[in-house]
Length: 192
Image 1 (cartoon, rainbow, N blue to C red):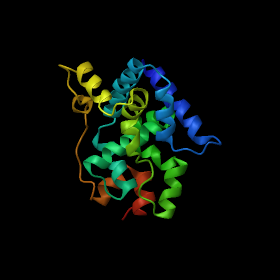
Image 2: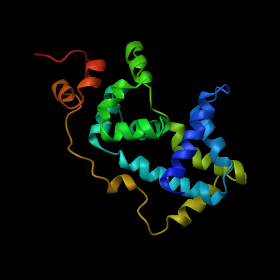
Image 3: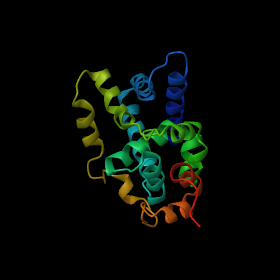
């Protein structure tokens, strides 16, 4: 599965979850993946790991920190999955300029309501495994196949990405400087 095929699967799940069905995105994604052959599910997971790892950066983590009112390692994993769930356009925009998330309607709404869990979507991380289980009836089949497929390769593409410059997420001035729009939404006006 190439990157366009990956985003087509995500787009189809977005369409299914935003339609009259009213199901969660992760559930719609599992539905989409379960329609594919097992080999394609594994190929999807490879693309997922690449796309997920590509936004393993300090500036994206800072955006997650602002939006989530803090963000642990596990939380950042869920945030990156949630960026994927937003679809290709928003993912690419956030990857290029994390501060652009300040313009996403769900982020604007969540900031106004004090909701600190917008974008974070843990279940998206496991959609391929759930789809594989649905096809095989075996809870371990995906992990066994994945282990064979990934034998001899680095298991974490995020470790290969350029994470950028580390900075203090608790320094409001630094957050206003690096992510001005998100900082204004979540921290208020910049001092001085």
